[in-house]
Length: 234
Image (cartoon, rainbow, N blue to C red; front, side, top):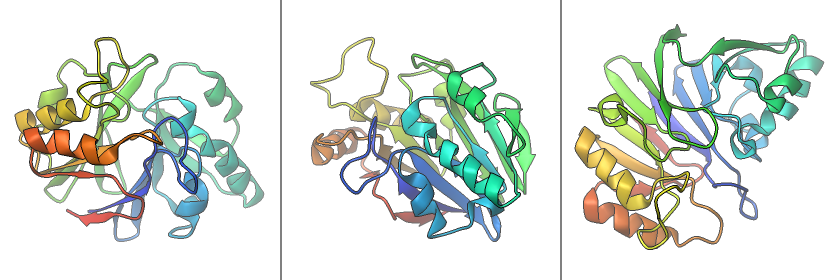
């Protein structure tokens, strides 16, 4: 599998940046994980979005799904449609995406899409949200989406070749009740689950990414910050 970062900013895009969006490919098969602000035009430089095998939405916060509105017009004007795995709960954004362009399926139910095995686990966040595990040909990755923990998350991540983890806060900033992991907590999750490599994502514009990376590395040395354009072959 090939994993590529299309966008990785948290909450809103930095100047010239894009929010959460990740592409998983094997040959012509492709899954898009989240489609936040600014992701669609960047995705289109790599791939016709209508040719995706599916889009996977971890939760309905704007910074993870807003470009689905533009994708709806793209599909409509070209007479195409896409499978979308998403939380089944009602949400205003989901209602806005109703129509023939998207065939929604429940993300919580395991599925096989174009050779990719996809499973999801509920995580702790202010609205229903899921971590996603994708496996193919003996390789695996886990994307936590936005999370501040979750029952069984360590086991869900266990042995993954790559963990892409929400890491929004430094140790000094984090406190109980916040909706995201600290970088140190992301490192602890990677270490406890035996992950091969950790990518720290959802860094909010203006945050000290170097410090976040340093604090993760103190716990799990094989930690790197998410950067748009980064591609890893698993």
